Image (cartoon, rainbow, N blue to C red; front, side, top):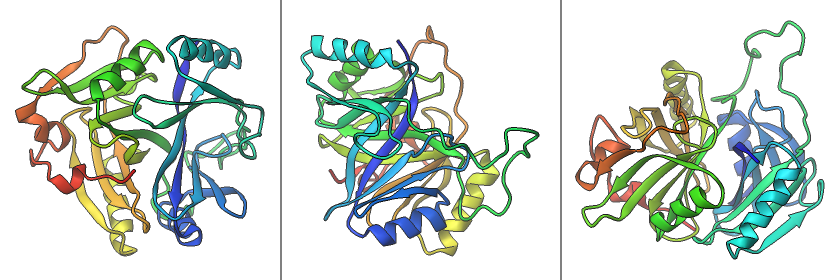
Length: 303
């Protein structure tokens, strides 16, 4: 019974055409399918049908996110574990929720977020041949990240949410910010042996802080900042480094208000590693190592 990695996010956009143009031309994702109120996108090195779904709604924010499981039987096993924990589960058959989506179970987290576990999403291939491929395709537009990397959510009870992910879903805590009162202010968790696949920070229930794509290295991160500046994209945080996860990052916003990140670096995690602890006084360094400062706007999100 294994959860592999972050599979996809579905975000709300009040202007579907504008958001699609941004995610295709600036971020550099590939459109794989389109409906009247939904567009499906993926990174160039992702084999599955989609990793980002844009859904037209009057507001921006997160509708749901999903993680990929190894085997179809895992859905039954996790459904049983969730029901034992008192969580209602909705089952979707193959392609029932969306084209190419596969089979899935969906449930509501204690924070009100909608989460999914999915198996068997249609494999459409990356942009490389299976025989003697080059390292990457030429002529990719925009930032052109190869894949989705992680998601960062807000919750009123970070400790309770963290325990749910650990006890019910088998995630492991890699880092945490612990307040002077002993409560967890922020946590980073993984299932893929990366520094984190999901992170939580104290805030409103149901909130999306950001979702992130992986890029190859610091040069690619710098180039991503160049692309954003060229297209007039609002950059929130210039290329810098996290203390927690040790990764390098760039934060910016899509044209409707969803916060994006490109991320590189981090470290490899073994299951028996002890979590790193950051004190409340050093939370600024945990998030932004060089400046050591977190302004209130960075912690502001929309549900």
